[in-house]
Image (cartoon, rainbow, N blue to C red):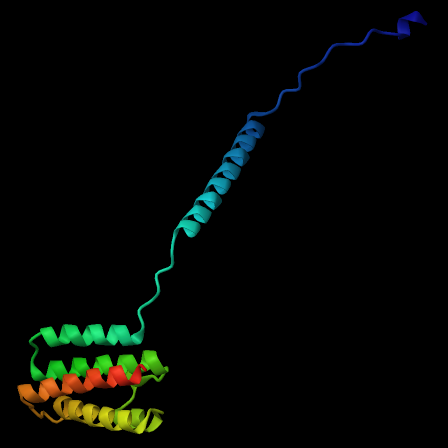
Length: 157
């Protein structure tokens, strides 16, 4: 009977395959990168002040001022002025002005009567230049640019 009892053996090393160690290292590095990216993003968001987008009013007046400084041919000048005004209307009032004819646009616009009259005269003159080969003088171009600026200023109130 004494031969059945044996002494306790010491600890046995259990070897882990190399891929277990590689997986463990990958997980630790991935967690570290995720923590670093989140903390960096939070720091960037906290330190960053949002820049407000320019209003359609500011965009239109800046574009009209640039146009005033350029010396463009009559047809291109009127095309650009009309585009600036139409884009202003789209941004300010949400009306898809660039895709409509002048008549369609004016019939759908819900603007004050004075603004409608000024806008209608301005857009009809621009249409005459663009489509009927009307050639206004320098004074007419200055007047058209002034009318566009006046419309933008009065409509933005």
